[in-house]
Amino acid sequence: MSPKDKQARRHARKPRKPERSPFFKTLGVLGGMGPEATAYFLDLIVGNTAAAKDQEHVPVIVYSLPQIPHRTDAILHGGRSPLPMMKHGADILARAGADFLIMPCLTAHHFLPKLAAGRPIPFVDLIAEAAAEIRARRPHIRRIGLLATAGTIESRLFHEALEPSGTTVLTPSKKDMKRLMSAIYGKQGIKSGVTTGRPRQTVLAVAAALVRRGAQAIVAGCTEIPLVLQARDLPVPFIDPMRVGARACVLKAGGALRPARRPSSRNAPRSC
Image 1 (cartoon, one colour):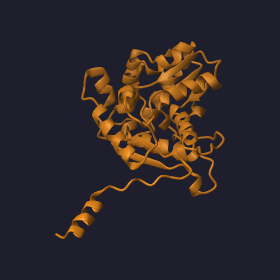
Image 2 (tube, helix red, strand yellow; image 1 turned 180 degrees about the vertical axis):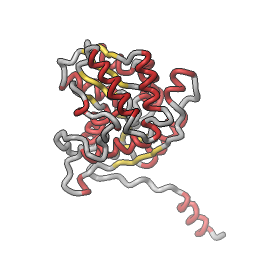
Image 3 (cartoon, one colour; image 1 turned 90 degrees about the horizontal axis):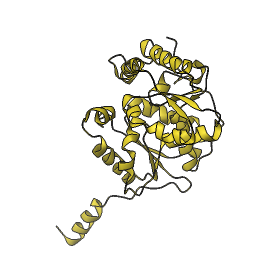
Image 4 (cartoon, one colour; image 1 turned 45 degrees about the vertical axis):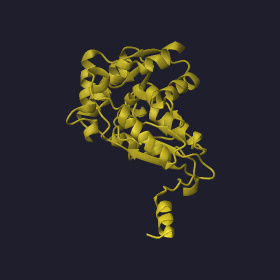
């Protein structure tokens, strides 16, 4: 091989630096936890952006990695840690050109401090954004009902974010928690693609029980909850950290926010 050919081969091996938008920062989405929640989050990004043409939407890179181990199993039962695969996914997004990252999975936020440690690219924290939204826009709410996985509740992620400001977090009873986990993870649950019938009825019933116990708002503490529950289903405000986080990401990326709108019919739950 000639010296010229060798030089051409060396240059060919060098990875190209990702092209960056001259006007926006690029959002990186570490998804797949689960895939439908990731798709819902992307819909929220588009739906909450004020754009008259394609070029006014924010750039987004998605890495959907459903093979990340079960977060709740790791937290509650010492199962395989999802952290190594999360780090792998974050590294891929960084190399692809993301300027900041988000995980559309609330239970995964238990691992966020270790995932973000020493990483130059910042993360948008869905739970911190939701807590800030409650403090800023709904300061009168002193008791929230939390619909979340057992892993999220055990981690006390929302308790730590809300209790310092005087907000009490109400969680489902032991019986209702078992029903809620089945609605999310069961064979005919939300993660298996079933968003009508029993899973939706169960989530509605558990939310209603929290309201009867004094909850002044319901927080979707699991990213699958908004797939079956919407504000119109409840007599109290419904706070969706995914929606709050999506709006925060649009602003951080340099986009313009569309005024708050009703959920699109694509994501609206059908009748029971």
